[in-house]
Length: 580
Ligand SMILES: Nc1ncnc2c1ncn2[C@@H]1O[C@H](COP(=O)(O)OP(=O)(O)O)[C@@H](O)[C@H]1O
Ligand SMILES: [Mg+2]
Ligand SMILES: [Zn+2]
Image 1 (cartoon, rainbow, N blue to C red):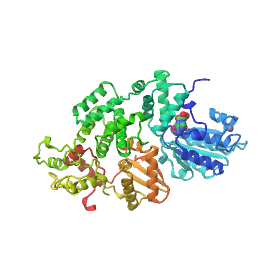
Image 2 (cartoon, rainbow, N blue to C red):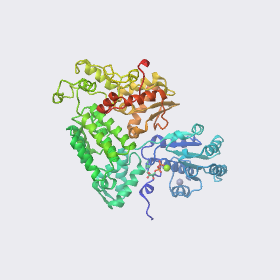
Image 3 (tube, rainbow, N blue to C red):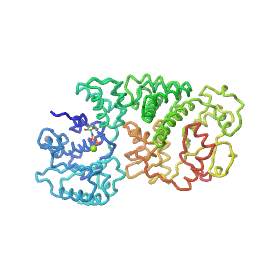
Image 4 (cartoon, protein in one colour):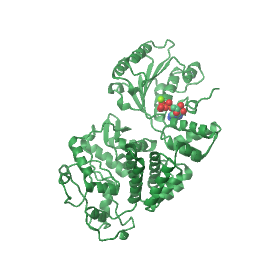
């Protein structure tokens, strides 16, 4: 038999073989069983998570000699034709290259003649969001008078770009990104079947680099085989992918724990000299710190950790010296650094800056001392007298607390109440004040992160508030991620969470099954109805000019800037005091 690339060879041929999309395959199987198939489906989700695969299996379910059946035989002519891609009943159209009206007209013609054999025609439109307006209108007409025995499957990575009229005529399935564990297990299974010898560490590196896409995982495996032959080691895979060795991450954590700016800078120097992609490194650092954070919050055996069994004790040990809020802050600083590395021209400088902020963030100075310093008062206490005990010192909120009373704000207040800070002064910066030039006459800056209510189209402020406080109280860690959403939108039974482009890494992490399921549970409970949750990137972020003006002024403000630098925070929103 001719050589087949692994991803193709291991394409699942039954619903049961599809990994991680049971919510889809089970629903489809039931619909077939009950003869209640829809005329059109939208399969959305990132690349390589099983959309096309599932569409083809559905085609087999319908056209198998035993069909319609949820368990196609895979040996009859119809099944075999579909598997080999040679079936006349299955039309696969790449909308990205067949965007025009002519193709859709042609398609409508083809579809008009229902298969004489009594079989189904299944039309798979890949990248369906790329259709032109004309073409999607023509498609809509077809969907409005759906021909007998034709099933449309629109696969897309960007469902929000599909016309609403089309969406309303189709049943939507959200394919989710696969977890580290799911990808690692699939790789393990396939390498075993292929008689490859592969180190556990190598599987872990591949599974992490796949970032939720099994196809990416398999393509990377393919590359690894080409590179190493049938014995694949951890070191080879790292070399191939330019992934830093685990000890570099260990080094980073040690530099932070020892407050060693020098070690942090040496680390960057080394990565640079070895030709590593600094952005990749930053993302690995994010994953690592996230693992540490999860180990801290939910224990080292949590399924949320993206690491194999034998690495977990190490994670637990590394997390030990840090407080949960330290790790949360490191996480946030690294996310911001990742954003900088994406947008800005000099990656090395930004990585250095990011790592220095990490090193400094770990050095907790008493808040009042920092504030005094920022206000330009000299502190009586020499640096050496800084309280080294994190219990007695107070770290300012890394991300400004939300207007609804963020967890860190509560901690701050608790610390103040317990006397951990003598003379606590809640720092405040107001829009009105920032308009004046010169020194700020009030106590000190506070960055207010109240999200404007207008951002929650379709969601009453009260509902949002209950959702947020439920998340904050029940799912602290999840909240630390969701908090970054710039927009919440409720559409029917679908909750869309939009993240700003710079929080892409965060949004991707959220898409894993566990956080998604937790989110869905909390949201459905609060809203009293089953909700689907979709995490999206906010490409259309626009703010009211006045607010953006005000924001720009804040961003220029030396005190605000000093605060942000110092605490590794970011301005979520700026609002006038009078609105409070
Ligand atoms: N959920 C999954 N279960 C099993 N294999 C998968 C899954 N998702 C992707 N794959 C692997 O990746 C390949 C490409 O998947 P495909 O269904 O074409 O992805 P998509 O259409 O979502 O981009 C498949 O042939 C299969 O080997
Ligand atoms: Mg596909
Ligand atoms: Zn069959």
